[in-house]
Image (cartoon, rainbow over all chains, first blue to last red; front, side, top):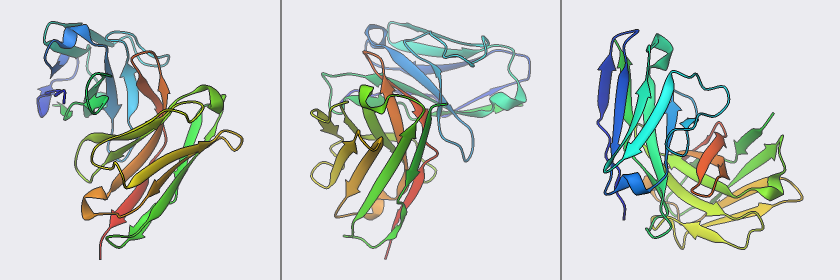
Length: 109
Length: 119
């Protein structure tokens, strides 16, 4: 099965830029989606198709995907961005078809 | 607005059964694939199952194959998950989510319902 690897934690000061990576074999050939989950809440989609933002998601959230690494970038980080972030891909040739990364806890210092 | 509301969670003994429901509103339910995703306490997200808009295509994660059954009633705008032969490792919050896109993503998600398998 396909494996997505995320760092367990990332820390950033308010106003700075946070980068959360998602590693996978040739992940650049797949479409990557990102979710934000705050404590006690359901996940919320923040990026789809590598870099598209759903309506209502701030422009501070952006994504990229190339080679073996996809990246979620959060600019001008705010205290309210503190959450767990998960990457996800869909691979119909894999079993299971849906794969989530292990999640990254973003801490705002 | 688009809304998904799960129900049916609770405490069940190992080997027991439970049926989860997800009531959808605010969109044309019959146009969308739907999915169940779970999250064990303190752990990450695990995809469980998805079902096509008509119900003709269904897939399961290996961890639940043969024990869980996903279904839907488009007339009632509802998604279901019948869970049999439950194990301690099935303890989790179960979310239903709408599936979108050709390389699908999940949006939105319901608030989740907690299933606890314990004697």
